Amino acid sequence: MSNSEKNIEPLTHPVLVSSAAALLIGTLATDVFYCQTLLFQWNNFSIWLLTAGLILAAIAGLALLFDVASKRLPVIAWDRFIGFTAAALISLLNAFVHSRDAYTAVVPDGFVLSAVTAVILVFLGRRGWSLRAGPRSSVAKTMEFHANSTEVQP
Amino acid sequence: MNANLLRAQCAIAAILLLSGCDDKVADPSKQYGAHPSLPAPQQYILPPMRIAFAKGWGTNQAPTAASGLEVKAFATGFMHPRQVYSLPNGDVLVVESNGPKAPIYRPKDFIEGKVKGLSGSAAPAGNRIILLRDTTGNGVADQRSVFIDHLNSPFGVVLVGNDLYVAATDALLKFHYEAGQTHIGELGEKVADLPAGQINHHWTKSLTASPDGSKLYVGVGSNSNITENGMAAEEGRAAIYEIDRATGMKRIYASGVRNATGLAFEPISGKLWAVVNERDEIGPDLVPDYLTSVKENAFYGWPYSYFGEHVDIRVEPQRPDLVAKAIAPDYALSSHVAPLGLVFTQSSSLPADYRSGVFITEHGSWDRSPLVGYKVVYVPFKDGQPSGPPRDVVSGFLTDDGKALGRPVGITLDHSGAVLIADDVGNAVWRVSAARHLASGPSEPARSGK
Image 1 (spheres, rainbow over the protein chains, first blue to last red):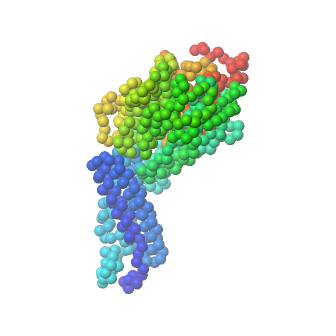
Image 2: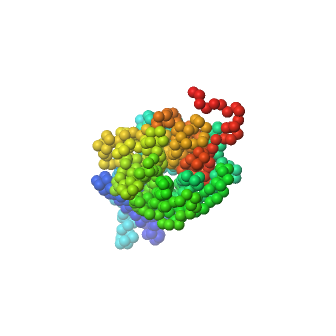
Image 3: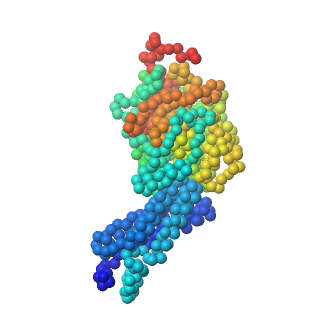
């Protein structure tokens, strides 16, 4: 198994997952700025981050399908899949909340949803942005891509 | 508890179906008059949008009038007519107008713009004034000319002596007018700047003159629904201005008025009245649009509160000092009906029970289900104050399946006392007069009795 994995093409979805996550985590920062300043432009910033993050998340979903269909990803880490999907759905809800007018677009519902999303994504992101199954697998694969290092034993 | 459950259901529906949940809506008649029932505000997951797709009138189709009245097309074939105004010699001005292109600040602005466009609100407009003349007196215009061209989103028009004032979206303009003139080629002289700017959310500038002609009054709408474009954008907005005709000096006559789309002087009391469009997105039955006398230097609440001291929690920082000063308007018309024009009827030639009140055009809702408005109502007055619930006068603007054949906007009386109504989806001007066959019929009941 190790040898076969080593020879397949690199995965396409992790870079998209990480990009989407960066924008969705950024929403928490702009929400904090809104709460501190009450400047409407920070809320606008948040809703654009959410929108762009959701578009990237949707493309990441397509990339994941591609990775599965092209047999680059034989087994999906379902626990991580559920985590990322939950973050995307909460962000979709959050985009609607952030589309309210003025203060209640952020406080309190929008801020809470941004914070929950950020916590989920930071937690998942500690092990990278791949949905490859296996213990410490994404870290291992990332190292493999960059350094072509020796494999981590399961 | 139920509210939380409902909110959870809405959230799930929003995620899974991208569809809103049906709100429990109140009967609009519970929101007529001085003391409307005001439910608790709600915060939406999905911005509520329910529009009537613009369809336009078929041949020989027309709105329907209340009994004793008849409706005929005075003229058709306009480009987004928003306002009608009668000149003393019987000529009629029709203002073809639409707002400047709205900037996209949020994804919502883009989506709302697209959806509202389906209701005809983005239709191309002439941005000019058309003059109509009915030379035969049969209630149909037979002459038409471009009266004033190349205006910047004009709305209000008023004639004082030989001075014709046009409220463009960024300035009040004055033109010299002689009776019988069918075209004005000169550029208007600017009397005063009016708040416009890049956002210019509520762009219409309503206009009327005091009975003695010394003062002009201009309605300037807010620059947002509820300050989502920031408080700085609201400088000089959401107010009714008084402009001295001789000097052009202007001052805010009343403030906290979200969007005064129609202004008129009540003939018995001589007081200024307005129809006002209130805020959206806190429920299908909030906040009622209203008809009110405009008290000098009064504050009507926007954005901090509505109908007196009902605080809007979407506005931060709040201003309890201003909320304490906010006064309630005189007469609620129910929520989201979008009153855009009014005319007092003392000098009308309609049957007697339409001659002591005000006609109000309700352009119709875009964010409430079921739809409301899309009609012209009559509010009776007694001693200068509203004295009863609104009655439907002209309706039939909607099809049974909720498409808009037309939407009423501006309203005036012509020199014969009939009512003229601008219809910006049907691109027509309708004329409402006493029904001839009924008026001369022997069975017409006496209308004086109580």
